[in-house]
Image (cartoon, rainbow, N blue to C red; front, side, top):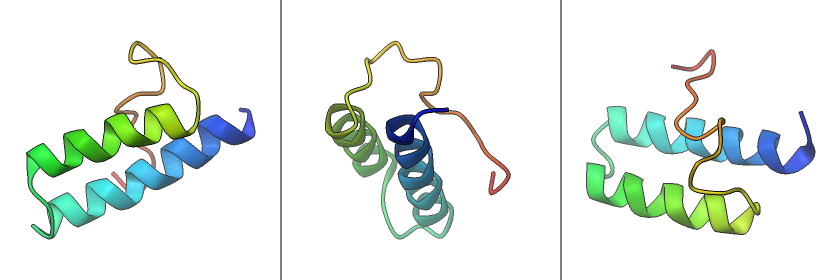
Amino acid sequence: MNDNVFAYCSAMAQARRMLSLQLITKEEYGKIDTMMLHKYGLSLGSLFRDMTLITG
């Protein structure tokens, strides 16, 4: 896995945790997802998008 994919997955694991703790809304989660995809140069159709890691 390249560094950008790993960084994206790590950031989204944190966002999922924040969502599960109700610190952010689903809409905010979606915005974070889009921003992280752009930041790490991944496409909207990336296979790693919404990938649930060990942290669930």
